[in-house]
Length: 163
Image 1 (cartoon, rainbow, N blue to C red):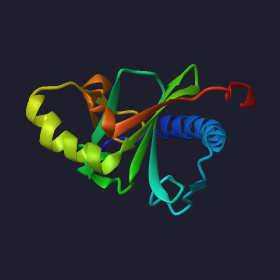
Image 2 (image 1 turned 90 degrees about the vertical axis):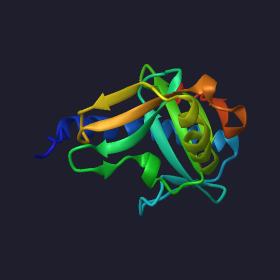
Image 3 (image 1 turned 135 degrees about the vertical axis):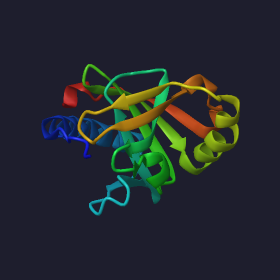
Image 4 (image 1 turned 180 degrees about the vertical axis):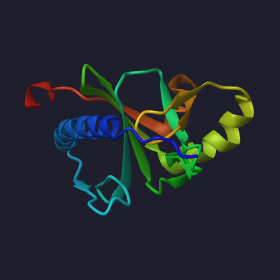
């Protein structure tokens, strides 16, 4: 059994992601962050030497969708298990533009998620997606439940006219 991969959906998302990354690169420059995108794909970019993985969500939500399984049929792990970056830049979009960026201390978040969150939240909500990359399972984590010292929130503004 294999999970059908929707190539048209994947291409639509890759195109959307590239558009948002152009907007984010302007934001990063305005913040004074020295960004180097990684062509080898061991991570998305470096910010002043720290490895960063970008996660772009097409809608603004009150939660982070944490990918725990990339494809349940093949058993491919989700990015929760595979990311080796120091930070996740979790980006929320509205009207096809980035509006919020959450810079998450990834090692500290993972430790909190496993040792604290899962112990308190025995039942939760998941998001299943069969669009593009297989049968993917994401766990929803409400931002309000995440300790403030694990992330910084930024408004991504002033880039609309540049697109």
